[in-house]
Image (cartoon, helix red, strand yellow):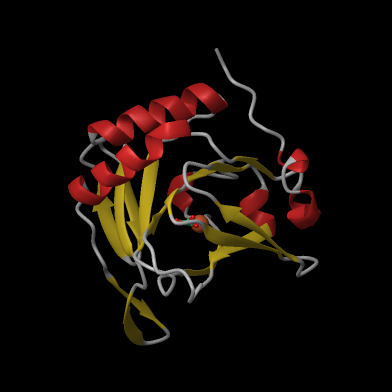
Amino acid sequence: MQQELFDINSLIKADLGALSPWVEYRPNWLSNQSADLFATLKAKVQWQQPKIHVYNKWHIIPRMQAWYGDEGLTYRYSGVDHQSVGWPQALNTLKNKLIEDTAFSFNSVLLNRYRNGEDKMGWHADNEAELGKDPVVAIISLGAAREIQFKQLKSKTVSSISLEDGSLLLMKAGMQSQFHHQIPVRKKCHQNGLA
Ligand SMILES: O=C(O)CCC(=O)C(=O)O
Ligand SMILES: [Fe+2]
């Protein structure tokens, strides 16, 4: 049976602002499974820290990453083509639960591991051609809570949501063309987070 996603309006009234038609947030989506999943992913995933070329300089990305997708898929991120080798079991189970609960389809996942509050991701939209036009993007968070900020490009309004351990955030169709998002530095956070 398809579960109703929580309406973000009823949960984060103060910060919601311009976001309400575009995102849905379910704080305890993984109930008590998040610690096991986090431990499995930390141990089993081949975490990488690629270098990217920006404004004529090479930078090592300020977080760890790994990508998985349906077999045969190629995905370009951080300037490198990644060829899919299929889904590890833990991620396949998670993907199936996501598809069942949201009734959207998902073909790949980018794992981002923030080792502490200094690790971050800058302003961007998830608008790579491989994701298709107006993609629906889900963010599943594990470990230490980190803030995600959304900037509406037209109004420049910035809204934020705390991504709690075990939460699911859905960015719905159309969002990527109207907002950018980022995971800013949080110097007081000394723990691991993964999304
Ligand atoms: O780590 C997150 O919560 C967001 C990551 C993100 O925006 C991305 O991978 O495109
Ligand atoms: Fe993103």
